[in-house]
Image (cartoon, rainbow, N blue to C red; front, side):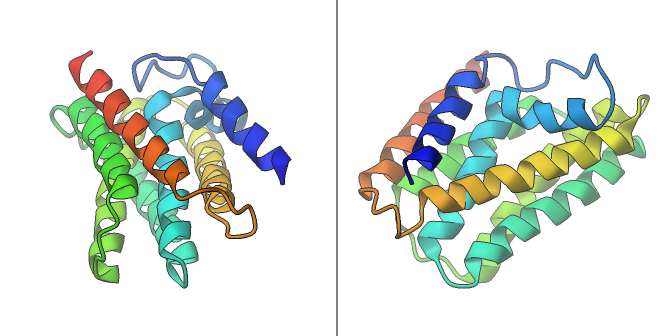
Length: 188
């Protein structure tokens, strides 16, 4: 199970500290797959959704990641159709901070609220990318992005697995890091 720890650390080290949406200079499936791995906001949010779902346990382990992927795809279609959200970078940074806070604080929220929050954050990410991709090979890029998103959710779930027996503090440290980095993204 050490390989999962090294993979998680490697993804964090691989992610450059850059703005959330530097663009998609190259096109296609591979470009879309790489974007969540190289965009700080995406990497953090996708891992956090998996970690939060794993921490909650039960059906949340599949419901929250599946909700995120489905609503992100819907948001991408909305964005590709030309809809834009004002201050999208602010909303994305806020999603990083909010998910970080949810990892730190163990609130018992109703499942509908959990799914609603995940759906809202997914919608922000989907619209942001859909509007970026409207003039390019959006479908191939988005399929790659959805695949990487699902993979990062699974990695987050693995980090939260009881089999790894990681201390509960891992969620808090990761969550605090997300709050700080989200604030940095917000200020940038």
